[in-house]
Image (cartoon, rainbow, N blue to C red; front, side):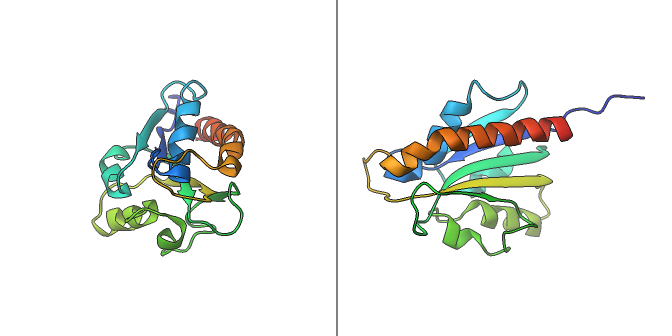
Length: 161
């Protein structure tokens, strides 16, 4: 019996660290650098999610971290996975980017481009997107929790395939 290769996993921290809470995805990704299993890809992306279509080619699982538009509780964490609790058109209200991750996934599917079989998004409700500002206290306080959640998610994906 031939051993099965572990799934190819990519973790992406989305956002602009020069726009207040929009930088939370990048901050979490930076803190994950030494906590991920060998072979797991890690990158940060400031631009629209369309640029990720090339990055996720050949990836089995994508775990993204991003700031969510304010919904009332800055720092509150949402774990979102398509097919379970995310409507196909959910990207716009959740993302502060011109084209969010869910729109990029939908476009890739429409164009018959490869899409990871598993996509999980950790969205952290933002409080402010002021240019030049640091993370708000509530969002900064959520970072260790998000790091732990993403590290656990990746370990599970690598273990369970």
